[in-house]
Image (cartoon, helix red, strand yellow):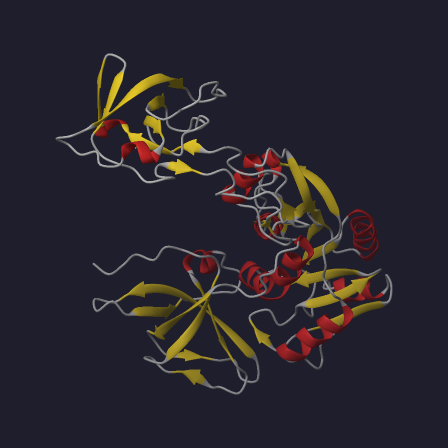
Length: 418
């Protein structure tokens, strides 16, 4: 397979032509489970928030006109007619010459149109002396000033954070329509890998990819289904893929896509339905053996077995697809500009992705330093990297000092220069 490698751009076009990712369904989700989910429709407010005029301070509810002319030396005297506490509906009326004590957050009583702060008053018996005038609406949050009934307060495809969930709660909602989380099956192949937690025989290594890729799917908002390790045997692989695609919306495999005698994933996938394998090898470094198939309308991403290659290819190719299936709108990772701290070389004729770490120099300049890759199976390469630099096939190298774009694996707080 992959005798003629596709260019990176060709591979993306072929994938786009053969598969259009979209959300897999809609369901009602409680607000306690809504964090990081994506809204499947607009949320229109069915009430005002707040639902009543409320005081924003502890003080006295007044008619603003009754306070005009008040100052420290000549306060205005008003008669106390009652008190309004938080959570109660006031049954008093503030008429001319009267005032009512009111707590922060309490409803404004009928007749009042402003609140004088407690510290601008003094009291003697049931007389309140106002030492500073207020204007109409001062220290009052009007009904609907935060959210107005009929307002579209949250929009379709909006990702739910603590703030959006707070808005739902403020409207009295206990659930909302969200896109379903796509189920993404994950399986590993290879005679050399062992499930973590089991004894490690000589010559074996623990399975990194299934667990790392499961975490990546979760970070995209999907629901991973870890199928564990499947032997490099045609019938077992074929059966595992069939079972996975019956219940999952997408499948990710790792290993079995190179040119060795046990690398049979492409052949197995090509036997399971049309169009089958659409991409078998991409002119990139790392990740050249990456294979992609479409089976029964579902995508299968077969990534290299080496963790660094597998996780980078997930980030570049698979992540945007999963995000769209989740309902998220982002397609590219966050990026920023930096200066190359050292010369970066490309693999001739291949799109090259160089992992870099980010630091500030003493002058506050952001530097991108290549992370030594060692062997492609080294998982620590990615843990040391802040992101990656993409170098086109036509370019031979990047010189130290060149301005470059760094695509971040995630938004991280960089330590500022001291």
